[in-house]
Image 1: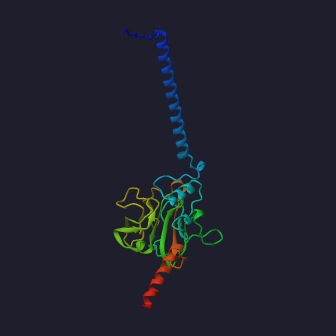
Image 2: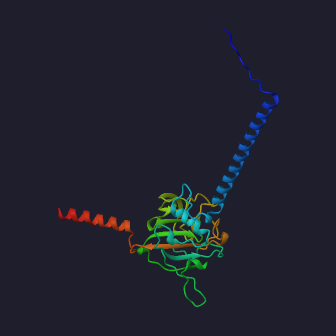
Image 3: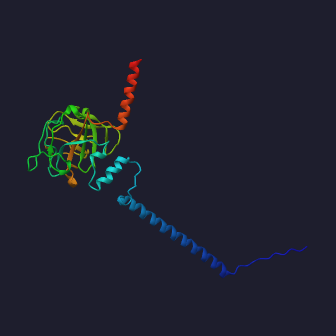
Length: 265
């Protein structure tokens, strides 16, 4: 039996044509990939640079409160009501044009009152960018809020933390614009007129940006942020008599129920 073998010979010009077609397809795929990559980069860049175009955007690693304040700061309508449930009362401010820290020397005990408008009325609105102070009863205060007036830097601390003495001291901070949970930072409160020095970061020397948000005695140091970009600095207080939040009310009711049960036993 004989066998037959048929060999198909591809003409040289057909092979070249097939290679040319393959290269063309590859180039088209590469161009498409480049175009899609450029479009993706442009879209991502727009989302980051123009957050107002994407109101639902929430950045990874930040809490809703931080995002809320950041977006509001860009619209000049940030508010202390956005911080830890609100209910804050403004009691002291220093203007962005004052050139110093607060004129008060009462070490945050709320003893001083100053700052009148042309009619002789005391200022009380932190949005006026004036230097003023209203008295407060330290016995009624349980928390302080310190902030630059654009809310780019702020912190919440208890009254006890703010009245601690130390040279320096590790002050407990309830929360701040850089950390939404309790932590400690080095402050100074030596009982001298310029104290307390309240800051978000450790106050470790005479120079450096410690994100200072409070100082007294018209001191002219540690002003790395105060006065910049029309930033003043203000103080708010919350009193012990304020209405509890829903979670606090629930906790109080639970505690009261347990105490009643134990008493009945």
